[in-house]
Length: 259
Image (tube, rainbow, N blue to C red; front, side, top):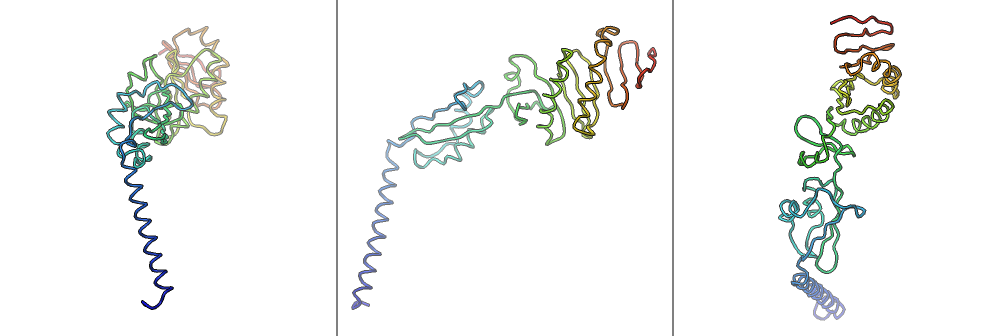
């Protein structure tokens, strides 16, 4: 072996290359540990420069900062992102480095649409269920109430938007929307009236049923004023109406009877 000059040269070059790599890695490690790369600031921005309404320095210090480790080079950005997404009101977070000692976190907040179920959770306009301070969510007034089977949240949000548009024709607005375990819809309006819409048999089922009520609603109000308690629209050719002092039959032309 010692007489093989080519082999000796190759071995020497390999050892030299390995030594240089070790020295380079050591130099990089040494440089990365310098105080100048210690994280000095974490800047938090709203997505698309939207001002954050609920996330503040206090909640960030309490929830996110204790989970962040490392410096400019060694901080795990995925871990930092997860730490910020654990902060109440944060829907999504993205993180990037900013030379030489900063992290920039961009946050998208949940926008509350209403409450979900009876466990104090909130439903966002995107159909996400999340946990946050209810009093803070309702600082501008009570929120609509929603409930439904697990996984139906986005469908409930979409139907709520539909119902808002349909009932606006008679100056009414939904305040409570319920989707039962059998996927039957029920809505309570801002005049206190409950409307049983039933299950959807086609894409137009609910719209057709609401249109049936809206078509005669002015006449009902003229006769009954604010005494309407509930309307059941689950009948194919009519409706059942309950009001203080009377019940109107299910079919068209059905006679009213005293309670």
